[in-house]
Length: 331
Image 1 (cartoon, rainbow, N blue to C red):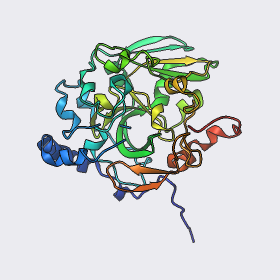
Image 2: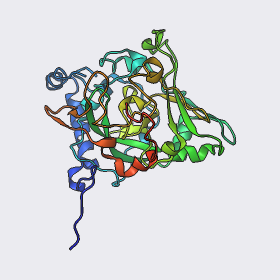
Image 3: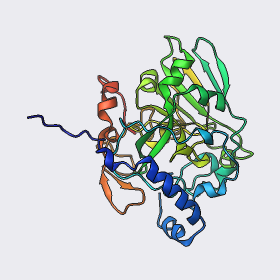
Image 4: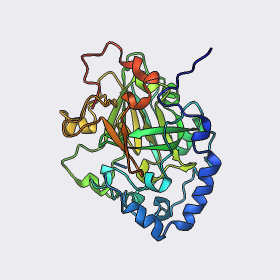
């Protein structure tokens, strides 16, 4: 008798929202965007990724040249243990310190121009390069993945990202064997991102992964969300998605990928290294210095659920940290 043990992330395909369903819902939301129903929903929110009663897309009149690329094929290898978070919540409940420290930043983020957008790939690579965002997208194998997202503030959501494996960019970059880390840097333009005028923050926002983490199959560069280009407040046009790590690692608005032999000091690590480390892997047994990580609040649902080690993705990533007991892997 064959007994199958369900993995932490796994659901039957029927439990994941099909592409056709969220596309139909998208049309409905356009009609409701300015209505009182959404206002009532947004008013209940508190906590890491908005604020308004309108869907975020309604405020963004600038057409995205990449819109014709979406929707893309969903990769069914990546499934969930929960319902997909509604689009209006996922796109209006945002942390983006470049635009301010409150959750009410999605409207401010619409000021960010997405073209021209040039990506720099340099450091320990065979040939440094600069490439425009649309040329980069044309070279990458786009797909959709449904991922959980766990904020260090102990809330969570589940969303369908479109994009490409980070490994595809690493392969294109052809890093030298001496490169041990990938340092990622966001845009810096305080003329549109007012939060960057706060001189006490170490702008631009920097994050990093080891080369092994960057090449892991879960590491993903998100360029789309809910079957269309990723909104500005969610990290357009390029955003890192590493679902086994806390959300502050998921750097937005990327403009540079630097391969290096020195471990990067990340944005929050530089601000408060005693609370935010380099690794930031999700672990319910390791509390934040100021709150527990044992449970999390599902965004849009009035309930708390147990937090899973590595956010439920341990079978993909646990081996990356074998023999590293001396490292401060969590938070």
